Length: 591
Image (cartoon, rainbow, N blue to C red):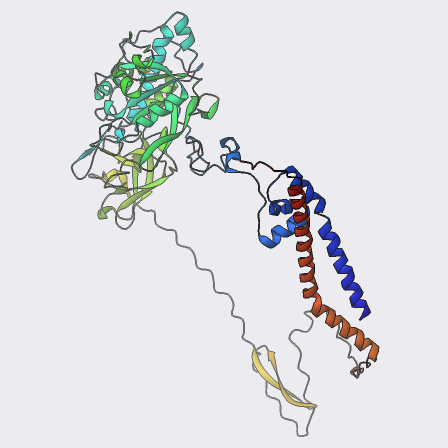
């Protein structure tokens, strides 16, 4: 009994010392006027951690006022506090087609070298488009849809490129301090879809193509900041899918820019915009909050008021004296770009990924040829390039892996062209429709699928004889033991012996396959008898009983220790409170 009593006494003394340790800290916190006694107790080293563990109280890390917008990052920002122009790599479409900047003006590189020529010079006769240019499409229901009012088209790219290069060519002819300062700025162009009035067939000259735009579209050029550019681009997304909307037709066809937009809460806005740069394939990202940098923006003059960049808003139209129209810019395109760029523009079929929604990806287009062409090899033109594919059992031709946006399908040169896109019908009753029906399939475009080469069947392998089970009886062991033996050809009969003989030994089929040593026979080891446990003496039994009693009483003593901890702490606080009251010391409550 003496041992466990000494142990419990030591435990109580240790608890008393543990309780006395935080007394100075509690007294100091009372003098400093900090928080209540529970908060002071939480601040005591070790003891505070134990109290938090028992009560579940959390350590105070900071207040809502301390969490500022500056501390939020792109990874931790929420929709409420994130920069609306910041998107994550998972939501932004970052695949840059190599052709997206072809035809745009590039500062220091793309300014036309022959700007001394007048814009009214004669257009070369060989400057003709080789792929149909789209502004509208006739649907099978008998209605006409204008895809240039809601997505990028190749005709829109051509018109915007022509506008940007014509403005840059005009600026290159100007003299003076103002012109010299403007020539160092990037040039971008926006053309609204409503300014494109019709399609341009393949083989059409640029002079004829100029007749497919609004003849009253006069171009203007203003200097804007990246922030203002974001606002203007977002205006073009209004009513893009509502043909009855007031702003329908304002979707921008762009040059010198690439943008990504998204729609959330029924509101579309641009979230990323890049500027063309000859040294970077992906371009230079523009900051939507930048109001210090500037670039030159070419756009129709009748859109200045709507975009808030008119004279009343403090903007200067540098093309006001040029009287440059969009039709003039298209006609003069061969003089304002080099031969390589001109070829890229005239042969461009389908979109090049300048304006796309967030998350845009590849898609499969379906062209219906009819059951008569099921299981055939079909040759066709996609964006003016020859391709081949096979039809299925229903005569449907699937063109897989098209980049997001518009593409031109034709059976052959001179045949009707068909518009393919995964964006045209977004937001309409025909959403998801990409299938078109071809009216005429030339016989020269149809071939039988190549016959499959028959594959020679391998010669059958020699059959492996199935082992049969025979019974071998040993004279010394009457138990039959089945032994697998290979099938053998019948042998000549041998006369049976008249006397009882020992059976001949049977050869093991696996003998010699493994080089093993037979294990030696071990003599059986006798199992030792269990040794009886010694009977403990009475003194040992008494000590074991004392340990069991101590273990059973341990929770009680721990509880007594906890009560002592609380009692000592409360006593310290009461004594401190009385000392303060005796000195008539009052503290002002913190607000």
